[in-house]
Amino acid sequence: MNYDNVIAERKNKVVYRDGDFVAKVFDETFPKSDILNEALNQARVEETGLNIPKIEEVGKHDGKWAIVSTYVEGKTLAQLMQENPDKLDEYLDLFVNIQIEILDKKAPLLNKLKDKMSRKIDQTDLDATTRYELHTRLSSMPKHTKVCHGDFNPSNVIITPDGTPFVIDWSHATQGNGAADVARTYLLFCLQGKKDLGEKYLKLYCDKTDTARQYINQWLPIVAASQSVKGKPEEREFLLSWVNVFDYQ
Image (cartoon, rainbow, N blue to C red; front, side, top):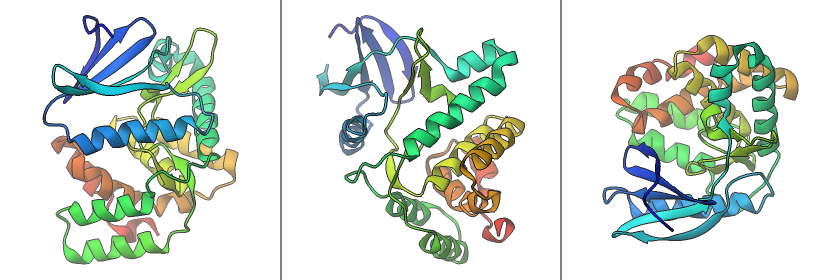
């Protein structure tokens, strides 16, 4: 693997490309357990048959942990939506169909979404009463075992030149209730200042799956609280405004 060609730089990580492979190299501050968990998540999701980059190697480069995967040529759905606004409805339809396909899969060895959400609620600085209400709601939600991406947004879907979609970035993957994943995607649109697109997305998902909007709404406070723990400071106030469980009955 040659590390000369940088194709992306993000907080705590740099992505390199060498031919048919990419390496995501993490800096020294990134917990080893999170890196190995990301690789394990990706390997487990590979086994479902979904179109995702394949793990090729986990090792070190210059003393830093690295995950090497197959390279997927193409443009993200986010790029395509921006470049072709006249095709927005077509892209959004594809986006929802891909999410439905993901949620139709099972990966029994993935971590459980409810366990992760419970830990995140405990990590917030919300008052004890609010945390109690969130835990109570979380425990009452139906238990499912669907594959949940955890960060499903148009930037994490690559469309190859022949039109094949691939989904990347499985670091937050869990198994659980798909409505939680849908609520997170909706909040991600809102965080990007695209609430109208988020509403359109949510209506399309609910129509396609015959899901009540109120059911998704019940997850919004839980997901917002979870997202706020590692959210950017400028996002925290927005996310915490969604946390009041009584607003989304």
